Amino acid sequence: MIQPQVFKANDIRGVISGEHPEWDLDGARAIGAAFAAAFGLEGREFVMGRDMRAGGRELSLAFAEGARGQGASVLDVGLASTDGLWFASGHTHLPGVQFTASHNPAAYNGVKFCLPDAAPITPELMARITELSYVELPPVARPGGYREDDLLGAYAAHLHGLVDLSGLRRLTVVVDAGNGMAGYTTPAVLGPLDVEIIGLYTDLDGSFPNHPPNPLEPENLVDAQRAVREHGADLALVFDGDADRCFIIDERGEVVSPSVVTALIARAELAREPGGTIVVNTITSRTVGEVVAAAGGTLATSAVGHTKMKAVMAAHHAIFGGEHSAHYYFRDFWGADTGMLAALHVLALVGRSGRPMSALAAELPQYAASGEINSTVSDPKAAMAEVAEAFAGRGEVSWVDGLLVTSVDWWVSVRESNTEPLLRLNVEARDAGTVAALRDEALSIIRKDRS
Image (cartoon, rainbow, N blue to C red; front, side):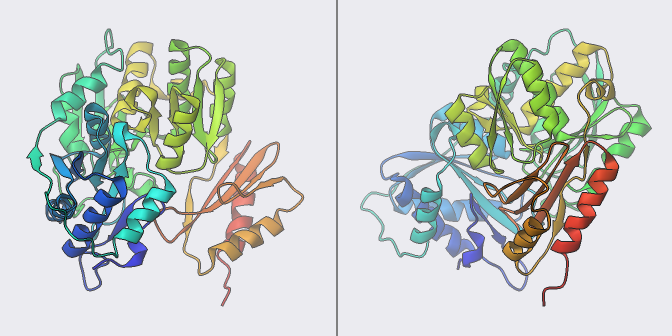
């Protein structure tokens, strides 16, 4: 069983438990067969991983059964963060499949796909997987094989080879794994370093008993903020469920904007490779562009989403990229996103500078921002059109990635989520008062009763 709504723009996500599941083991089996057929994997191998969510092992094995029936062989790396699966794909040069629903609630599970070397799949390929999932594909004469391997140690060693971690002062770091995959990868990656780790919710538990696995929501950062203050830590790392995103909290317990983190890493990467290209999405702060320009780099802009960002990274041979949602992309990591590598860069910056995290952030150009504000609306396109009409003549309007209105001193973005039935609002301006006024005006339109 597979309900059509599980097929998203870039991946698959749907409810697997409760009274109204949206896909099940038979659905996973069908998707596996569709994946193998769409990718042309008869007689070839792919790599597969899974996070700690309920049903992950069963779903992944059913998927593997369907793929093997189409002649594809499976390299199962077992438990893995999503960036661990990207590593596995790059390390083996195989296409990859990761079972995860990222930051979605516990009732969800899903699938992310990649081409060999962690390259993003195309919309056409995603559409083909969707189409073939509803076709009864006859099994081929020779089914594919199955083998297992553990690549966690190789993943950690690869990350350590990408950041200069020598000569750092000893740091005290809070790590909030949110009961997600960072609880699995942190000991391997951070354990060997001269770092005192204060772990929060490091036990793997797909029911997320302590807080939801989405650090983009401020309430999910509160525990790490409190721990930083209580322990006098240098900073905190807060990961989402599949650990491909990482939020940073400074020594005061204040959240560091992912755009600021992007700017800091971009500047460091441009010092290593002058003139390089940095990729941002359409709602990343203008701070990044100003820092990149000052460092002599080139800025390229992508629509929001990991498949789109990866494609722009590849097209420009970009050294680094960052999104407002704390996805960070590295050319030396096959252009893919990895929260743990971003965390290592931040530890290196703080540990080598001798200054606190807040001081590093304060030296950058400052903007006020609303943060991402989500609204459930019955007609998202009508809501965006009304916002566009209200802001007409006050700024340049773009529809490349939802609605984006840009002026000299501010911008307003309204776009549909790629993964949830939500309309997302982001506002940035020179001062907090302008942000509040623009935010309230846009929200009054987005949330008005259209019945």
